[in-house]
Image (cartoon, rainbow, N blue to C red; front, side, top):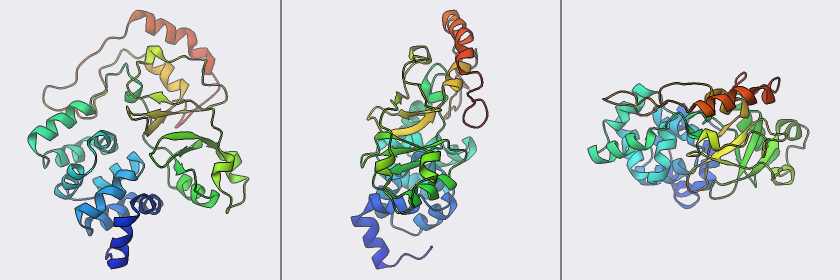
Length: 277
């Protein structure tokens, strides 16, 4: 998939969201190789419509200059979530190709204080559109590291609910997943302080919850176990874009740490994504 013809280019141009759905079923390296052969104008919109971690891995597979050109063409509010999915060294190589003012702004956006949900979320989510079939969703699950459920989004990338893996695997392949969606799983904001996350309300039956950006678009997911563990960690800020000057240190409030210790038992034995966190 390295030599796009006129029909392929027309498809990218006129149906970018549908194209993104196709690209999400490929290995990110293959997506990166393919989009390198496509004009930036045509590659940017499908890339922007992809799940953030997949788009980020595709960018990482490109030459930094090419990735930087796409970063410039992608809506600004989406870029930080794509860049967080890229290893620090590769990410910095891309940012060095971005105009100075823009790169400085992106580095600021990339920094999450360790007290915020976004610093601890998993960017690698199994994400499907509501009109996907069970077979399409299963293909996405197989291409996602360690999923525990499928997060279903609308045409604007906003979460509408989740599908447990057991329900997905027990359904006929041609069935629409929209009929399987449980719509009661509430999202969390990426910029929400950990201390403001209710450890009981909203977690009943959910191994993880979706995390959304300021436009309520899905950017990741997080487990209650990870939130409680993070409350106990008096660590430096998790800064995906840390540059010169190092990492800013944020001390946790004693009350928050105590609350984390008290509530840790609530998730004992529940397990979670990638081990206990």
